[in-house]
Length: 464
Image (cartoon, rainbow, N blue to C red; front, side):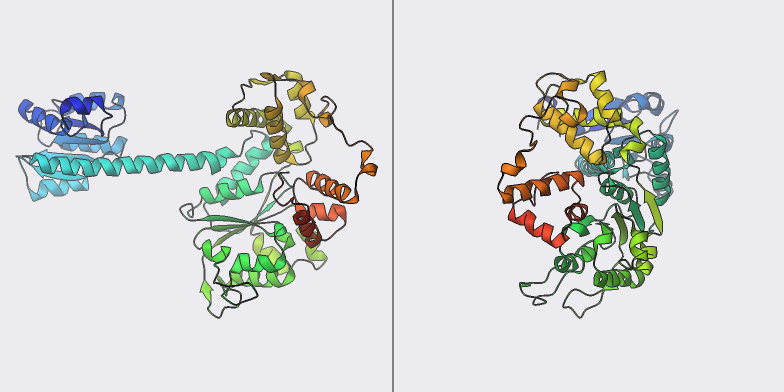
């Protein structure tokens, strides 16, 4: 690639070259420019250091060791103090073991002797830049993860949320089991993921499992896995969530819904850190952090004999309560703005915001389904919006907006029985914020019955 071609395309990287000998500086610069690097040449170390902060991102620095004023060792130490990630290659005509040892101890990434083999120099610089750019990409991905799952993804500035943040910062770096307690829709999985992403296990898996959405027989296999032939339909070995989450975090939502026999097995996992697959003989040792969540009163379940007391105390090493939205109303405008921007971008709608009156209605609303219900309401408003500013009349009827078209009113009596049942199930699910166990209790039917009817009416994937 010629110098002209490299200028027309995106440079392979930005390299600062420092050498007090003009001929050496030109030779090093041209050798790197010919293979597509952008070179920033400096005739002495002092000039480089005076301009270092304003140079922007550097992919590598090449510096002569012996120079008047600020020499290569001073340049090296300053760079490593300010940004340890920048690779530094030292070049000198005064090569010695002592110089090399001192340079490497001070953080030099490479060391070459004069006269410099330019082909070898290019090779080493290419490797250093590739490592630096990979590191930068990893940092970017880490930042994106932090934005999505870090504490910053839990929006709010109310006293209740600030208190939760303080607890999360203390708990996240540990390996302690955590029980998240809160109403449906308060963001328990989001908090669990934030705990994982801010823990020493962040490089490993975070696996969620909703215990209330799976029948007991399937739940056991989902947790522990099974061997081939363990039961009818087990045509091959399956690895469970516990095994997959080794050295990571397993999040069990609706923990109060697991049956008694699985409670015993889960307790053994917590105590012994080992288990066997369903139908298996091999003991599998694991290292898993367990985060559980419930929107029911586990203490009451313990008193009633429905939940094991010993398991309960193993799960609640740390208990974090997630406040319902009605206890943090001052956060609602912030949440509304966040969801409005997000869904306007997703659905390509030119929406600037809500009128003060509309925002006031949202802030005063009850929000039984908490943040989940608020999020779904905002998405609905965005999708149906016909103007840039959402007004009160655009809100749903239960929030004081225009009456909903096609309201059921008293028309259910004219519907077929199956349609009445279907609508009753949908209504119960909406009232329960999507929590199937709670919806089943409201309908006064068993969870298995509800699961079967959801399948019958093709509602398993319905968004609530």
